[in-house]
Image 1 (cartoon, rainbow, N blue to C red):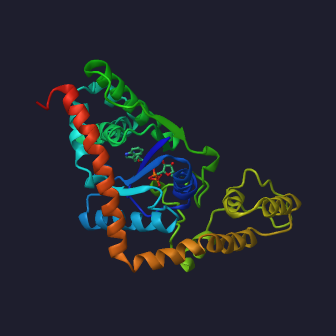
Image 2 (image 1 turned 120 degrees about the vertical axis):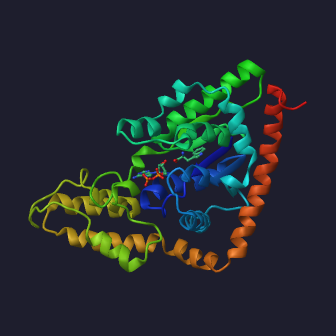
Image 3 (image 1 turned 90 degrees about the vertical axis):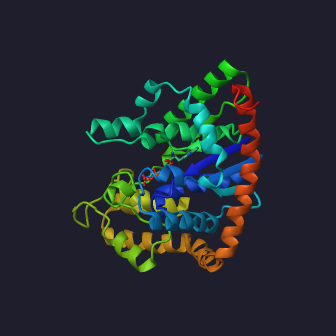
Length: 322
Ligand code: ADP
Ligand code: TRP
């Protein structure tokens, strides 16, 4: 299994990103023959237009991933733009990409539907993503449901290139991340930075505790029994609880006679405990920027070696190499 995935540095990681994606990337590094994980700063450039912010978010994403357990001895971690071969490959693919295919892609389609002006970067976004995947001969791409369409586009482009120019690219498959891990935000909607309802993994513990205490709950009286399954506070609690703790809390809900503040306090304690080790590691790594640069430099060198080989193959196939 040759695994690859990218994550955009468009904000600090929240619990949804961790439980929905990052935790699973980290698990896969032990199972895969090789795993390439990159920080998709070229994709982020379609939304983050402040250079200092993009630089900081990219660096923070690297430190966060290392602190959360991404192991550079097992997985290759790098920054997307450090592999310029991918942008070249993107052009080769673009020349054979039907406009209609991209017009159907959500990000562009949704923006247009809202009457907003889209730029060519957003339009071509899925082609760059296809190049990201094909450049490393990846066969397995762990992604959330929202990205499945992009993997389909990648397969279409690869198959049509192979058909026209002869076998060149490996056709990848999406590995759907565990969707039961859909994490609700502080308002009960899906946690997302676009909804302003996030709880960030490395938020200052005091600020985080305040945010947790402000999680929206209903106003049913203390004595009334409550249904745990449909309660987003209970779902958040379950992310950190073991089976026995979850069962005990569910029983408490059904019995009634407790206030939500009690659950929130327990949730804050558990979350703090859960991420304590990562937080400690993050502090340590933060103080060693030369280590982070070394990891990203080694990662980019390894990724480039592979991408160069695939690019050469594609250039030869389509006739731009004499
Ligand atoms: P956001 O919605 O905050 O902009 P992204 O789209 O950058 O987050 O998320 C990157 C990945 O993290 C997604 O592809 C998805 O797999 C995962 N993810 C994001 N939010 C959640 C959530 N609330 N629950 C589960 N997984 C999530
Ligand atoms: N578009 C992906 C997202 O928003 C990030 C990404 C860029 C990616 N290139 C990729 C994911 C290649 C998987 C493979 O989440």
